Every structure is written in C-alpha cells, then in structure tokens.
Length: 448
Image (tube, rainbow, N blue to C red; front, top):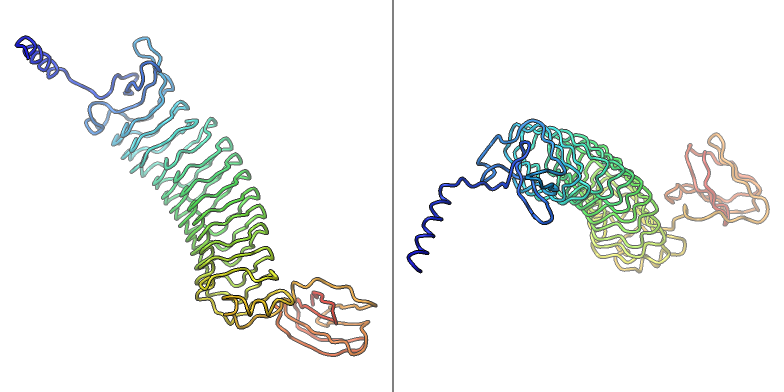
C-alpha cells in the first residue's frame, strides 16, 4: 500500500469516528423511517438510533402511521413496520396501522404496556413472531373495512382482549392469529370469512361465545384446541372439513351441531371433550379418523349411519360413559382392536335386522357380547287387512288383528318389555312413554 493511500485511509477513519450514525434514514412528523428501495420509493417504520433499546420514549400517545411520507421532495410508500420498531415504548396508548402496510416485523410492539387500542387497516400483510408481546393492557382492536386477511400470529398472547369482531370484508383468519388470548371471551367471525387458520384461537381458555359466519368452509387444525370455557358451537352448513385437533380438549363443550355439508373430520378433532353428551355424524362421512372422539367420557350413546365404512384406532378410546352403540350399516364397518379401548363391551350393540351374525363374526366387533337387532330402525310395513295400534291414557289398544297374532312391545333402545298372543282386540296397560309395538310383521312407534 502506498504511503499516500495509507494516509487517506487514516483520514477517512477519523472522519467516520466523528460522525454520529443512526440506523434510521430520516424522521418525519415524529416517526422514524428506513428506506427499503429508493427506486421503488418504499420505506419502513423503525426505531430511533442504532438499536431499539437505545431510546425508550421516542414514541408516545396516539401514533398514526401514514400510508405515504414526503422527504426531500420524494414521496415514499410506507409498506413495513420493522422488527422492534416500537418496542419498549411504554407511553404509547393507541396505534393506527394503514392499509399500505405489507409486513410487520418480530416484536414490533413488544413491551408497549400502556397500549390499549389498535386500529388495523392493512389489506394484506404478513407478521412476524410476538408482534404485541407483553402488551397486557391491549383491550380493543378495530379491523378496518379494507382488511382481507388477519395475519398469522398477529394478536397472539394479547391477554387483555375480551371481545373481537371480525367484519364481513375479511376472508381468512391466519394461523395462530389470536392464540393464547387468555382473556378473550367472545369472538364474532363475519360472513365473509371462508377459512379459520391453524391454532387461530388455541388456548383461549376464557372463550365461551363463538359466532361463525355462514361462508366458512374449513376449520383447520387446532383452531379451537384447549378452549376450555366453550360449551356450545354451531357450525354453519357450508363447512366441509374440520381438521385434526380442531376442538381437542374443549372440556366444557356439551353440544356440537355438525351440518350435513361436512365430509371430513380429522384425527382427535373432538378428543378430550369430556362434557360432550351428543352429536350426529354427518351423512357424508364414510370414515372416522384416529382418536376423533377419544376421551369423551360423557357420551351415552352413539349411532353410526349406514355409510360408515371404517372407524379408526382410538376413535372412542376411554368413552367410559357409553351405555349403547347403534350401527346402521348392514356390513360391519372396519375397526381396529383399540377403536373402543376401555369401553364396556357388555353394553348393547344394536345392528340392522339380519346382521347380528355378521357383527358376531367380524374382527373386534365380536368382542361385544350383547349384539341385538335394532327394531327402532325398522320401517313400518303395511299389513293386509285392518290393523290398528292406538295409545291413549296409558292404555295400548291393538285391534283388527287375526287370531293368535303375536304382539311384542319394546323400548326405543330395543329391550323387550312385553310379549303376548292376541285375538282381534287387546288392551295393554303401560306407563307413559314411547314404545315400539310389533304386531306380526308391522312395527309402529306409539306414544302413551
């Protein structure tokens, strides 16, 4: 290196040491910016100085981020909020995010403990991790009319939120958008939303009131997992798939309305729903996946419709409250050795007429030792002649029958209660209730 060049390097180094360097490129109206692309004229919001914790109060009060900023006669589009941009600014109370924002960085608002309101207007954007980490007093968010999607993880861990309304203009709720919002009690999902992302409301342990809009077609994996305060969920009739673990461990859930549109329910979707007492398997379901209703200890009865072909391992593991199972499939569905693990095999298993032997011979169904025909599934067969069965004031009147006709009376579950041979007319006294009365080949339900 020449002596002249060496001396030049020393001079430059000395000059740099005298200049105060900042990470941000410029400031306008109290907000600091970095230029992302000078040709595209795009900028991002950032912190003051060389690191986010160099200054602790550069931002305070109500922050309105503009969609465009003019600097040195150049108009820039504000498209991003950088990592840690507003982190640890304890005096920020409200933030307005414009429609132009396309990305929000990691920990962008970390530790903004006085932040109470967020107005979110970004049309489509992605967000980093823990965007509002430690914003424990954030109690209200407004989602603007221009928003199409809620970014994944955006409001995760916002423990101060109690109610969220997602307007009709939103189409998708991203993965983990509101996960671990432990104070969230009520969520209204607008009629424009078509998909609820994975983990969207996972671990929202106070969530008790959920309204799902009528355009939702997919509830993705773990969307409501561990929502332990949720008691009832009404799933709209456009939903076609409920993915793995979607409602896993919703321990207070007692009732779920599954519409006929559903053709797929994932593994462990309702496992651990220990208070669930009833559901109807949609007619389009042909296979029940692994562990779908495992651990639903409050279930008393289940009915498999005639299109069920396969029931996966652990599907009803630990459903110790079951008192009866009904399968309407003439041919026994395929099951595993642990499909009904820990279920009492002495409970009645009702099967279609003529199918008892098939179930007794079928793998693992044969473990049930109380297999019987399901008379409640028999459709009425019109008999020749005049045969009338009437119930009134606790008396069952059977008339118009041929001599020596056998009349049997069963409970709705199929249990035989009474059998006799009658001629022409019979009066049978019974307690009030609903009965299955078989007169010859005719079966009728009768209310007394």
